[in-house]
Image 1: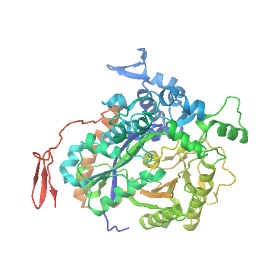
Image 2: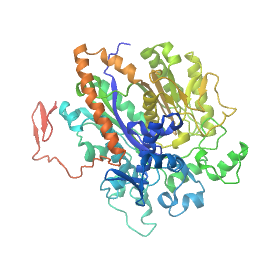
Image 3: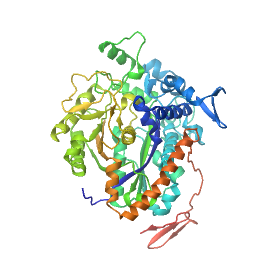
Image 4: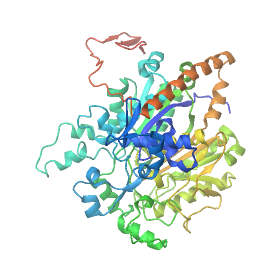
Length: 578
């Protein structure tokens, strides 16, 4: 396909969710753990054990948290189960998320996709009473910069100060005690609100933290809230900023920490939650034992005989670059974003009810994919990350949408995954979780199966779908594209078509001369070595978290020079052009 617009290249990614750290594909690898070789399994286990604080490197050796010296490989192999049970969806940790017992004892909803047990992002920088989602923003964005493979300052030197954009935030906002939760509860509990509660509770504050404390960005900033489709709304803005030429680099992300009594109570009141009572009823209906109580690890069962959704927390970021800049910098290519569409539902019977908008977004993305890779590749070499919330309504409505699109475009046995079965529903970053998993599939060749669902429900439409209940493995470059899908309350629907790294490289190679591409490949070697070094260091717990508080603060009276043609800012190599 000949493109008239610049292509938005995915040149870096990072974050943290209940499966672990995103860079190095480690969180994704945890999803497909059984399909990995031993070396990769050991890396996943090491990263998790370090995140969880179970082990630490002391000198050139390793010790447990109690100070016992260990042989690292032996320890990891002996503790596979205990390490992996402290991630993904599991029983809510009362002391961390529910010290007052409201969730576990009053609401009685015990399952959530929590960050790896023992991991606290506030330990890695001076958090200063930041809400948890903002702590996760700082950690996750720093992880993306590390994966990038070169210093952020090298990017800044190549672009004008206003050619960087940042789109990131939450869907609901920061409702813990350091955000809106503290603001709303303070008088009731007999205390006073903090001056930070209101400001730091705002939904767009993730982008603000990235600009102010991580990148020092003065370019375009924003956040498009679209309920559960929020990440894709931001991805659409980032893609369009690259295509329009207004941005050469666009940071796209979302961060949400919704495991709070108020948010869980809200979903419980809507009968959307897989609470303990519903879980036990589901287990009994499926012929499973209820003697040991709710099985939290299988609380979310997309497309199966299910009970409801499970909340999760996540922070995910991708760094988009205009293709020529990516070539100039020697950036790695993890994929590209040729198509994102968002649409509403029209008139609705209820604000939470489904509508037609998601048919539009998926159909448009499929049509774009046919233009990008051809009908044969669309039919044989693509897969789908479904929204897959685990509710009875979603299993019928979304499966019908996907099946209709497959039928329309002649797709047979379209592979469909639903990773909320592992992670829970992280709200704003949910499609970020999907995107990171897609990049992992192109690195390893495996699509995660829906591990919690034993059989499809009778009301699921699956004639032309292959809804994966087990991992599906192919060669790394087999899939030329992937679809991400999101359906949000209020009629917020979005879908995206992501182009594989190999397909993206073919398009980039056609843009430049052979000598320029050879030069790029040489620079890429260095980038990849730096990325590997970052991840090797992180595996030892040396996270390079960037938090620049009160550093290089620009003063309008002293640090800018304005002319009718542009503006020069202190510390920036290039100027803003008018």
